[in-house]
Amino acid sequence: MRTMAEIVLTTLNARYAHCAFGLRYLMANLGELQARARLLEFDISQRPLDVAEAILAYNPRIVGLGVYVWNAELSRQLVAILKRLRPGPVVVLGGPEVSHEADRQEICQLADHVIAGPGEVKFAALCRERLGLPPAPATALALPYDLYTDNDIAHRVIYVEASRGCPFECEFCLSSLDEQVEHLPLAEFLATMERLLARGCQQFKFVDRTFNLDVKTSGAILRFFRERYRSGMFLHFEMIPDRFPAALRELVESFPAGALQFEVGIQTFNPEVAARISRRQDNAAAEANLCWLRERTGVHIHSDLIVGLPGESVESFAAGFDRLVALRPHEIQVGILKRLRGAPIARHDDEWGMVYSPVAPYEILENKLIDFATMQRLRRFARYWDLVANSGRFGAVIPELWRDVSAFAGFLKFSDWLFAETRQTHGIALARLTELIGRYLGRAVVARTGAESRQDRHSAGNAWR
Image 1 (cartoon, rainbow, N blue to C red):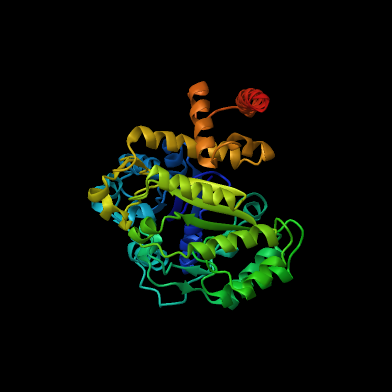
Image 2: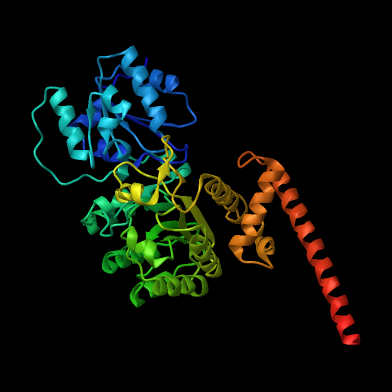
């Protein structure tokens, strides 16, 4: 017989390996109501009907559902099913997807409550009210890390955060709405990290938007992990690209190769585009830091560029891409601009003819400078770059794709050819992909060899004259 639970906290993760960090925060801050609650995680490969069955088996009075851009449509279906089957349980929505423009979303009309923004305190208060309990006294935010199970630690991504918010105003990002950065109590945070380490946790993914903003705090955290380093430890951080002072550099250089991964978002190298979207970035400092990371450290560098920003032409993006390739990050994520609900990027829609998909994740379809057909080519470029260049499987072969031209021009030509051959961007088996790359490079080598041979004969003929 399944145990009943008055409160069910649930979401659909992008994949099983991801843990629902937000739900664990909600659970940690329920206080004595934790004993009356259950945390149920699913992923987007599961049918909403089956998810509904699992939730209703607990006969809950309150269902808290985390809604994100990757699960928006499935979550809508889930709420519709829950409400048709059992109108009684109170359905409470939270998460970035429903924190803005709630009046335009069917899922918000189907649910009973929507909590915008951070929900730990609000959700706990709503549960107490619904269960007929008096308000709880104000307390400090409880950290969620002890709620990770042994199975989570052994098999899943463990998310952690030392700060919340972002001081920057990049208009494509919802973090731009958080003007203040809140640093969690460092001593308490490190104590929870110590407990995770003692339980065997080896991989930590920090979700701080600007980990190196406060160098004193980031330095203390890096020093903590360096002093406790053991083989196999892996730490992921999102870094501000133009902020690596000497004290931080020394710490980073001290880590063994492969222990650190830095997500260093460039997004655009075009200063006019950056200013248009309120992105402050010293490109020269960012380039210098990427060179230092590549040459002096063992950090795995993941960098980002965005296609479709207002005012960024294909030529401008190509120049930025070539500039970034020359800096040799281990991965370049070519992202397609998304119009996240509530993000200020929407203010450019009229001037720059921004047309977005109405379906999550709301990617740009075309704009004033890049028409739909070209955007589709760039979308395929991004997908194939991830499949081929970021996979790590093809190594030194990759530069051969642009041996005689720029990186962007060469890879775009290959991307166009690959799509013409396969008509696919997904589901290409590795063996077939390998054969296709070999066939493409073989043709390029033959063409180049022939051209060189003709040039040699031409040169020889001129010499005879």
